[in-house]
Image (cartoon, rainbow, N blue to C red; front, side, top):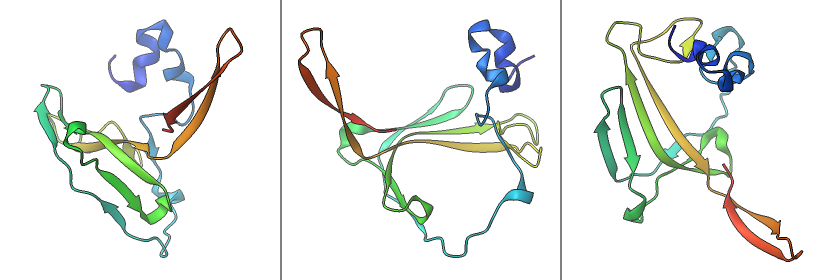
Length: 141
């Protein structure tokens, strides 16, 4: 027993993986998808980074020191911009066995997972034991 479907059984601390709702991996049901003809195109900036073969998958880490963050915006994202920080490419060693997620119950030979955080700052107030307020800016993910 391996894979995301069994993580909650592998370790007691991960019980939520077997009982949680709306979590990865997901099965996309084409019968409930809606087409929106008014969606605008997505825009993706160019980026520098490092591509690495980990032995399990290919991973692309965005070079944050380059000073050129990559953003995705437009389309259904509205006014929000999301900053990419990692892309993972999964491939299986057999046909139809590489994707974690499924479409109508069917696995595919590969999958691309992109990891982003929303690029809007929120202010968070913290209070210490002396009742003094500290203001801290956090990236809202």
